[in-house]
Length: 283
Ligand code: NAD
Image (cartoon, rainbow, N blue to C red; front, side, top):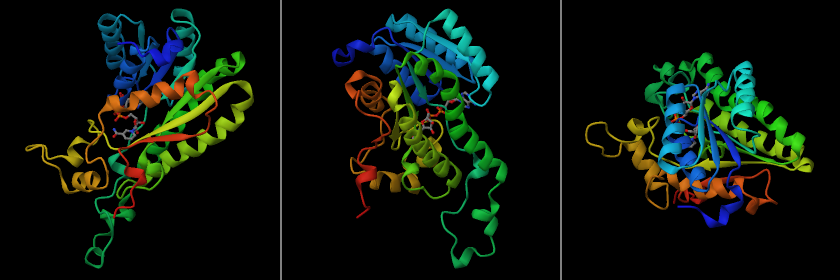
């Protein structure tokens, strides 16, 4: 089904990094439903190519898949050349690649008096390597593709960059300090770049998804055997006023809005798509 409100997006080209992942796949379908030509970039070449071929055959809208590493400038420059030759000028970029690492995750939510002999399960057991990985993927992995793909947009004085942040950017969740700080840096960078590009027709915004059941978090929030909520899953649901996890398609309206001319006067913001999570004080 084509979204009439987003008609002008038809045949525009959008690059999606991490496009082979759960949310990227859903966003790519949402974009294709508005006639956008999607360019799926992923370090997982098979996932990128399969998604592009599925969209092209199932939806009748062109889609292209390429292997690219958001942390490797040469790989991004190479793929940019290929896209220019095989697809055309890029109008939009979604920086979707991101994620956490177990090496940057504590076992404990808080240190209590009873756990003073197991400090390694908390802050003191975190590995610098894990922090570096998570900052690289979420922050540098947003910075580098923007450097490579937004240059042509600035030269043409038209384009949109959309970063993928998280609820953790506003208030860090327990256990995942690196991911939280890295996503906060994505919000800060979104504002900085929006101002920097504001006079040359390139808008920069972000979305902050709330809690979606995806491969990354499924077994942290639901029991593998029974499918019932874990205590952490219960906490999330009781702090989400709508009382449910988001479905990946729930992001698509906001994504289309921020990419389209309907949001022409909007730059430098981050829209939560979170079932009310960020509005709730917990009581
Ligand atoms: P996912 O793991 O399903 O997708 C991430 C994709 O990025 C994968 O296909 C992976 O192969 C790819 N990738 C990883 N490293 C890469 C690299 N160096 N270069 C290129 N591609 C690389 O994750 P997801 O749940 O779909 O999350 C997508 C984005 O949404 C991430 O930025 C994540 O932090 C954010 N997010 C997710 C949730 C959630 O509930 N799932 C909530 C808030 C924000």
